[in-house]
Image (tube, rainbow, N blue to C red; front, side, top):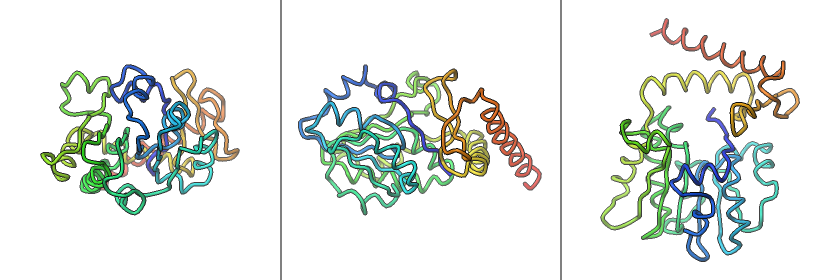
Length: 253
């Protein structure tokens, strides 16, 4: 039920703490092996792989088990971009330990910990294991502590693999940095369940701004404007389902 998103490459580069996409591209060493965990429909890996043919970039996402999502992510992909359908909590089954120069991830861990903090912790340890010694992980958004100025901008947390940083300590810090508040997790669980019920897929919203926002239409398999009559109806159904689930949970508890 976790959403499949498609954040733009330039926007993600800034979220990850780089001045722009070009500076992220320049930061990667020659022939780097890079992993994007929970990449979804994002073009980040695609654009960087096109700009740097020497780089071997891997996108991993559970959503790729859905053929439509995988086909969308494959469009225009260069040969040095690999797309893997996989579960991040079993990352070692898809990616070798100590094999990656860099690992990126954005909003996967808040989604995981919304349901199970121990699951998110296990996933973080798996991510750390894939890094080479000296490799860098960039995980976002950094949500805690709430008063941290970077939290407002969604800047990611950066860590380098070293003998001084254990997998356990790394995992717990990822969890601490990305954990949503209990209230936010409560709302998101209800919302994710409702939208999955309405759209029948983990895809639902797409667009760079409120003006250009589109919603997935399960009847046609296409995205339509949220301001179109059919789009408004789908959004209203999802919101109504969320409210219904929240009321049901409150009454039950």
